[in-house]
Length: 214
Image (cartoon, rainbow, N blue to C red; front, side, top):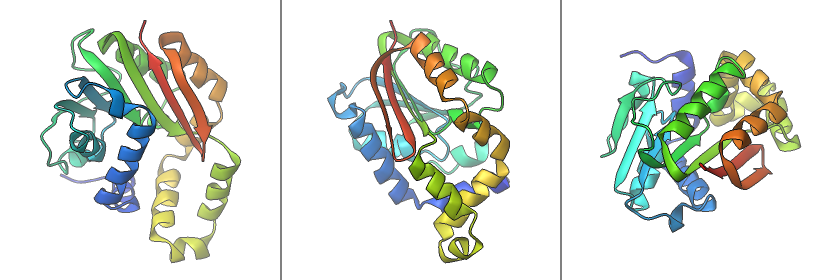
């Protein structure tokens, strides 16, 4: 099962344990420690599954992942059930999940607003009333602009394999990535039309959003 150039760069961007620690810290910041441990949680764009590992280590017992890359999902060795599927059409029943998590997936969508609307509609559909939607995505801030400047430096890329991996990922999805960063008002409006905001923070080049389905 072959991986794309973007997938290979993603894999070398962070060692698995480092990514698990990052996802664990994010989930804690977004309130996951207060959720019932039997909450039905599904992570979209789950990739190689380190977000699922973070949820497992926090004690959650009903965990699922969805990603359309069979090559990345094959790297996951945990106990969560994984679906190879497009997040614009989820293979899950309506009103069947308590939490839907996205940690860096929406900015990969090729068309805005069409693909974003379809994905958010699916998230809203599968959440039970009162269910939570958690979204963490890149956001254009002075910090992120500085990171982009570093990615343009050949010297820094040679010195930092992590920076080189990030720059490679950006190169392979430049059009969709830049389109995402250019439309913050559209993205926030789409989120808030479907989910009542409980948290909205922008820090260190990331949007942290938690909303509830009405």
